[in-house]
Amino acid sequence: MEELKETVEKYCSLPVILLGHSWGAWLVFLFAAKYSDLVNRIILISSGPFEQHYASGIMNARLNRLGAEEKTRVEELMSLLSNAELKDREMLSEFRKLMAMTDHFDLLEDAERVEVNIDAEIYKSVWTEASEMRRSGELLKTGKKIRCPVLAVHGDFDPHPAEGVEIPLSRVLKNFKFRLLERCGHMPWMERHAREEFYKIVEAELEKR
Image (cartoon, rainbow, N blue to C red; front, side, top):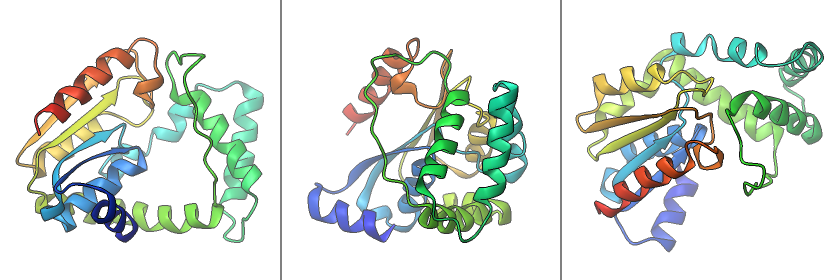
């Protein structure tokens, strides 16, 4: 959050509109709660669920979408990734690619892809802290401090359950909207059937500024 704050204050006209995808959705959610004076509104794209009981079926949903050989490899990688000393970026990258196979409905073949330089140690430390916040209820409770409008956009094929975003947030946020995209996985801007609608929704929200 401190890195994001430095970037926002250095390069942006305040207050900002922040869009966060997946884990990044949690990041902007927490940021808006802590630095409300810097944020005009936030958009949560394909967020992870905000309560632990909604998260229990994510991996099963993913594994059920894989073939037997791929499923076995994912289970092997999951065991290796639990090793606190893991520093093999190639292994983490392989795991990420296998998960990506389960997360999409109908991905555009020519969609622009961004390669991410993965650091396994940072991933483990950040995710350990974030997942504990969800488990303890702190993550959702933090939302009570958010004063700006919040929009969540989610795909109906995303293995992260949409109800795990919509239901909890509707309880704690005063100004909250939820949009579900049909035939859409975890990356709406790369989905053949949902891409156009996704951009319409985001652009309409940005114009409200």
